[in-house]
Image (cartoon, rainbow, N blue to C red; front, side, top):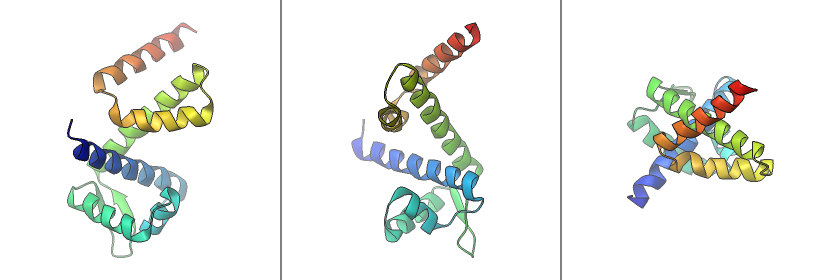
Length: 130
């Protein structure tokens, strides 16, 4: 695996996930909101937003508000779903909530679609038997 490409994808997913979460919480999102949420500098976030815009994941209005494109929203929703399912799964296995959240954050970027689908199907089959 190309490690620098992996890091780039992980960063993109983290930003998109944060934008989607903030949109749900605040309605409208600006770079400063993302900087505060992620505890990053405003210049770092500005560079990232330029990158996300160039890749077609976001649009930015003249007033500075950021909107996810359909592609960006899909990617963010997929990442959030992985995070939610993996963290809840780990918690159900007895892992401390904070550790489960941290581990899920790392796992959501590395897990293959096949493994995630298998975990999700397993969790759903257990839930449907209850």
